[in-house]
Length: 378
Image (cartoon, rainbow, N blue to C red; front, side, top):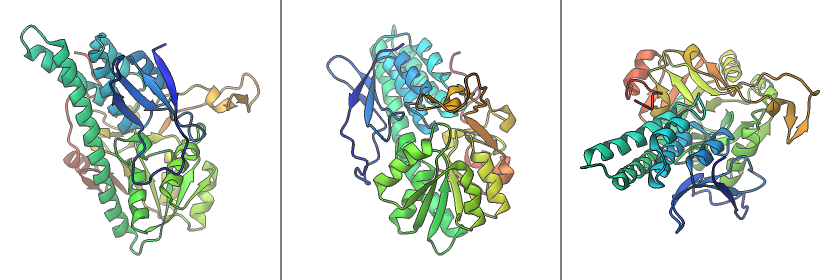
């Protein structure tokens, strides 16, 4: 177990809608640099920060979902490399551990790789090697990635809002979302939630329908938390109530995020996304994926090539530590499912919109960044 402690904050679920939630930040107290995370497993009941002083603590926080969401995992991974470097730990070992903490979200390995490359370049570029300078380079790269993601979030909000205006002229949107895609997953205001928030600020949002997102209730705990904080009109529903909303004509568009987008446009996202895409297609409702270009993995050919993380069974058979199924019940608990490109109306990135979603169109907008996308060591 890593070195990690908690700090309790004053709970204010309304907050300031003009300030994104501080989901992650780097601090340098007298006792040494730390990475501070808002513990998302404690929301909305408590606003608690985890203070990570080493990489094992950060890996534990990632696997335990204290910090989550594809873009934020990339930022956390980059800062984790910097943390190891600044504190004098084995940077290669730290990078390897971080990159494989969760297998599906491609941004995690991407962020680790960027900070590690900056560290190695600075180390080999100095006479005799300069660990302190290399650590500073890794930290600078993590901060660059953090800033880039904030800019990407704002750009996705603009592109997504324009797309909604084209698809649904007249405003008054009723949008259905799944899982959590706001400031809690981003260096900015999020991905899909950022689009919804932009519509709300322009008076174009009638209602946000929030899937509770079983089994860990990221929609109920986190998206509702962010929606309340922003002052938008929202309603929480059980995942299996979505069909009745579509049938009643109360869903104008579905907006979700993504943890990995394959080269053919297939999207891995929180389990339960694929059924929404099927419902949306049947009811002729736009199904829109909002994700930064860093989530597009040109090194993964198609959806069947994406490794799907399997979560512990107790997340299904227990609720808040209390059993909801007989002792010994086996549970099927994939963290993600795959939505094929044919069911996706559009993919919105900071670079623009892909619609229809085809391999060529996706490659043109989001070209491959480097070979060996998930390879960290080498």
